[in-house]
Picture 1: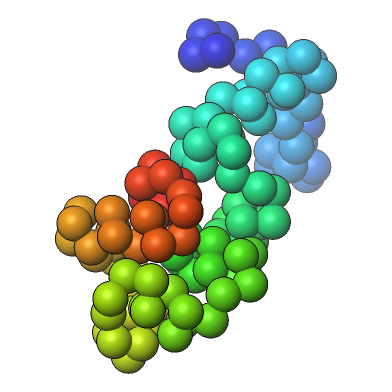
Picture 2: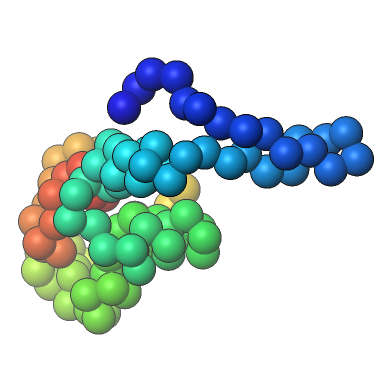
Length: 113
Protein backbone atom coordinates (compact mmCIF):
# COMPACT_ATOMS: atom_id res chain seq x y z
CA UNK A 1 0.00 0.00 0.00
CA UNK A 2 1.71 3.15 -1.18
CA UNK A 3 -1.20 5.47 -1.90
CA UNK A 4 -3.15 7.99 0.12
CA UNK A 5 -3.75 7.25 3.79
CA UNK A 6 -7.10 8.24 5.29
CA UNK A 7 -5.64 9.75 8.43
CA UNK A 8 -7.14 12.02 11.05
CA UNK A 9 -4.73 14.33 12.88
CA UNK A 10 -5.54 15.19 16.47
CA UNK A 11 -3.90 18.30 17.87
CA UNK A 12 -3.22 19.35 21.44
CA UNK A 13 -2.71 23.07 22.09
CA UNK A 14 -2.49 23.64 18.36
CA UNK A 15 0.30 21.09 17.86
CA UNK A 16 -0.26 17.76 16.08
CA UNK A 17 -0.17 15.06 18.78
CA UNK A 18 -1.72 11.92 17.27
CA UNK A 19 -2.58 10.44 13.91
CA UNK A 20 -5.55 8.11 13.64
CA UNK A 21 -5.89 5.80 10.64
CA UNK A 22 -8.52 3.19 9.85
CA UNK A 23 -7.53 -0.16 11.37
CA UNK A 24 -7.30 -1.96 8.03
CA UNK A 25 -4.91 0.69 6.70
CA UNK A 26 -2.86 0.48 9.92
CA UNK A 27 -2.53 -3.30 9.54
CA UNK A 28 -1.45 -2.89 5.93
CA UNK A 29 1.12 -0.23 6.89
CA UNK A 30 2.50 -2.47 9.64
CA UNK A 31 2.77 -5.39 7.27
CA UNK A 32 4.46 -3.21 4.64
CA UNK A 33 6.92 -1.79 7.17
CA UNK A 34 7.93 -5.21 8.47
CA UNK A 35 8.32 -6.58 4.96
CA UNK A 36 10.23 -3.56 3.62
CA UNK A 37 12.56 -2.98 6.54
CA UNK A 38 13.10 -6.28 8.30
CA UNK A 39 11.88 -9.09 6.14
CA UNK A 40 8.77 -11.10 6.81
CA UNK A 41 10.35 -13.49 9.32
CA UNK A 42 11.93 -10.98 11.69
CA UNK A 43 10.59 -11.50 15.21
CA UNK A 44 9.02 -8.62 17.08
CA UNK A 45 11.69 -8.89 19.78
CA UNK A 46 14.44 -8.23 17.24
CA UNK A 47 12.64 -5.25 15.71
CA UNK A 48 12.01 -3.84 19.20
CA UNK A 49 15.66 -4.22 20.16
CA UNK A 50 16.65 -2.27 17.06
CA UNK A 51 13.95 0.38 17.04
CA UNK A 52 13.42 0.93 20.78
CA UNK A 53 16.69 -0.13 22.41
CA UNK A 54 18.89 1.22 19.61
CA UNK A 55 20.87 -1.99 19.12
CA UNK A 56 22.48 -2.79 15.81
CA UNK A 57 20.60 -5.46 13.83
CA UNK A 58 23.62 -7.75 14.22
CA UNK A 59 23.60 -7.47 18.02
CA UNK A 60 19.80 -7.70 18.24
CA UNK A 61 19.82 -10.98 16.31
CA UNK A 62 22.71 -12.41 18.33
CA UNK A 63 20.96 -11.67 21.62
CA UNK A 64 17.65 -13.04 20.31
CA UNK A 65 19.40 -16.26 19.29
CA UNK A 66 21.05 -16.42 22.73
CA UNK A 67 24.55 -16.62 21.28
CA UNK A 68 27.74 -15.14 22.69
CA UNK A 69 30.01 -12.97 20.60
CA UNK A 70 32.58 -15.77 20.75
CA UNK A 71 30.09 -18.30 19.35
CA UNK A 72 29.25 -16.08 16.40
CA UNK A 73 32.90 -15.21 15.83
CA UNK A 74 33.77 -18.92 15.77
CA UNK A 75 30.99 -19.59 13.26
CA UNK A 76 32.35 -16.98 10.86
CA UNK A 77 36.04 -17.63 11.50
CA UNK A 78 36.77 -14.24 13.05
CA UNK A 79 38.39 -13.03 16.25
CA UNK A 80 35.86 -12.17 18.96
CA UNK A 81 37.35 -8.69 19.38
CA UNK A 82 36.92 -7.95 15.65
CA UNK A 83 33.35 -9.24 15.74
CA UNK A 84 32.62 -7.06 18.78
CA UNK A 85 33.81 -3.94 16.95
CA UNK A 86 31.55 -4.76 13.99
CA UNK A 87 28.55 -5.53 16.20
CA UNK A 88 28.83 -2.28 18.14
CA UNK A 89 29.68 0.00 15.21
CA UNK A 90 27.18 2.57 14.06
CA UNK A 91 27.81 1.72 10.40
CA UNK A 92 27.40 -1.54 8.54
CA UNK A 93 30.48 -3.56 7.63
CA UNK A 94 31.45 -4.42 4.05
CA UNK A 95 28.90 -6.51 2.20
CA UNK A 96 31.10 -9.62 2.22
CA UNK A 97 31.51 -9.40 6.01
CA UNK A 98 27.80 -8.77 6.47
CA UNK A 99 27.04 -11.83 4.32
CA UNK A 100 29.32 -13.97 6.54
CA UNK A 101 27.62 -12.70 9.68
CA UNK A 102 24.14 -13.29 8.22
CA UNK A 103 25.11 -16.85 7.35
CA UNK A 104 26.62 -17.38 10.80
CA UNK A 105 23.44 -16.17 12.47
CA UNK A 106 21.18 -18.03 10.05
CA UNK A 107 19.34 -14.91 8.89
CA UNK A 108 19.00 -13.11 5.58
CA UNK A 109 21.16 -10.21 4.49
CA UNK A 110 18.05 -7.99 4.41
CA UNK A 111 17.40 -8.71 8.07
CA UNK A 112 20.82 -7.32 9.01
CA UNK A 113 20.75 -4.24 6.75
